[in-house]
Length: 492
Image (cartoon, rainbow, N blue to C red; front, side):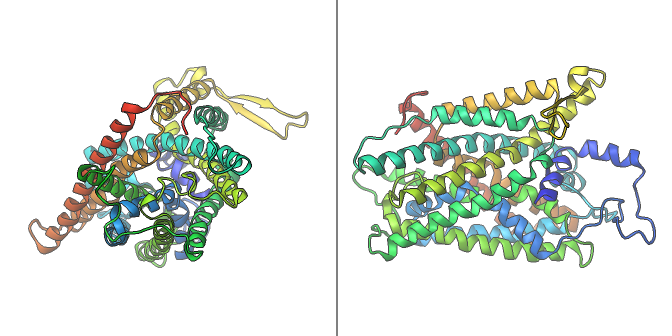
């Protein structure tokens, strides 16, 4: 995990720096008989289908799993389950197309990042478009994680309140102090120069994601088998008192976005593939890893979404662990929410560090002589200098301002489901569907209007329409929520 994340950040979003460093170091072609390096002079890769599958599962399972019960409740058993299956099938297929684009079509050279693959197959214009989509998505993830972590922190306080005062008690809690506290913590963590210094935090975050998702599914399953499940319908929530036909459609659109968000992870697949051994061919191994990982994840999603819907019926909460369908055992609910917080503290850095890297790389190229940008100040925390902190003024100012801005946006829009739906709509189609399909067409010179071309474009078009619908649904939900929301007020 540490190796993958280091590659993801330092190569995936600092490719220009890597190119300069590799050319200056003189590492080009592997020397004969040297088994420690690959053909490009980089350290020998040792990954296999199981390590790649583990990396994918770690990257894909996240806070999006908590909204699946609500999503299935809006769509119903038929459309809800079908949507999960269809999204998983499309993800497996397009990920396989992306795996075939890992090596450049003419030279056979490895591409180390998603952006490099796009640039070498589709040109610089698409490269810039891809970079824009990635960074917007990363920024949105940071805001979304701030919102989600604060909701879980507040849920712990509310859970203890309900346990001590009764389930009918008024336990209003403001999320704002928790968002601000999250921001302060992330300012400190953001001052660590490189993500590989946070390897232990990354490992803890991965374990936490499995823990809270398992607890959520387990609690829902226990409620179902105890005979206290909710009323479910094949078509989901009913149109009637309190729900118009138009509102149901908007909710269905948002549900599509929530499910898409749960499958948005393709931007790290190239980095994962670059950990695989050269033999057998990386694309063949990666296709197997995609199949294993997405099938495993889909089974996990089915449990969370379907058990959650069966447990709560059409009243399924937007967040399985903070909507207080579960009051007892309160300590287990607290543990699950604590796991969410710990996971998102680390995940915040995973998604923020690439943004830090690209801005700081630009600043070093723009002002190479500036001490503010380039000088590192070391501070020893003990006499033997075993604990040393490295500070840089530009990094301190820029990263702090970024975290403050992200926290402020989160304070203005603390809406879990709508934000997840928007992130899913913005990230899934371009990164998981559009670019892999277009790169496959370009690399294999698939002729226009051929049967294969038409089939690929049909998938592309259908996913685009779903993305547009999810975007409209999430924006409608955000607009409706903002009409009645008062920023910086106590929210139940």
